[in-house]
Image 1 (cartoon, one colour):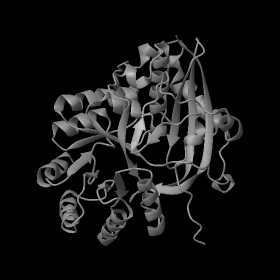
Image 2: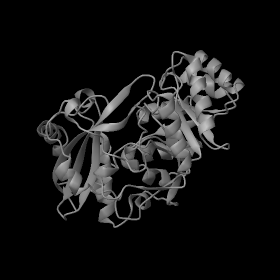
Image 3: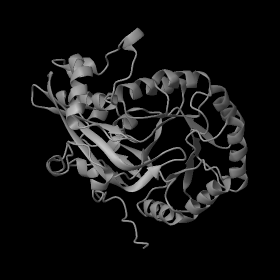
Length: 383
């Protein structure tokens, strides 16, 4: 099996709800499907996503891919590329113009798993077929009513752990949201908060102690301070013994290694680049550091989560991407299940390709209504 062709399909659509944190917000989705086509006819699928600005026209995405990525993969066996180690030096150490990296890794691993007829997780060594999921709202910009509706619905679906956004300039607002979510869900729920680097180290220490005094036990606090403040993160790990520090989300593999060496995390946060996640996951296992898998596009991270013994949680954020594929990941009773189909199990939906592709960049006013995620309760009409 060798990579012989590729196809890119650009999508742009409104989100069902605004998502974001104390630093950013996003009202629409900007996604392109990358399909790597093998000479055997098999297709490997990945997704290119930009959160805060639209992707360029499809023709420009294709031009950039042909220029920056295609020469390194054309005619190559996927299995020979997935573990390839590059030597970034000098001018070679630079980012791609668009975020092709995750899509490329996911698509290549999809092909490699299909070549041997295994689900991706099995190829990675999975010893289980499901992992606990926590409900994540990406909820900083929701009104209180919508916030309560969102987490109440997640509770009805069987989720037992819930992560909310904090980091407001008004700390009373953070405490208010914790109070709201604690009343909206089951009594034995577990809670996480995510400050998205909104605090300084001593500020985080004081605010966490205030949260504890207010009666809100936390499973973890995520990214409380700057990603590379290793000394400050270690201060929190050592000084806040009643909860755990979840950090590393914004760091590359090298940064995650340095973070663990500095003792700056209780739980290491990883994301969707398969090779990178597995490498850093093995190192975390060697150090006995638990791992959480943050948001991955269409929950493809369930394969890595099932394969890494240190992974205890997978994030699910109820985003409206399910219409892009034939069979989204099964989520039931608070668990995300690894599909038993060869590869990662996701196939681009032909109706979406035919009817919802947007080759040209559109102004937001022309995006129309948001596609509906059936896992999300429709927002009530409060008008």
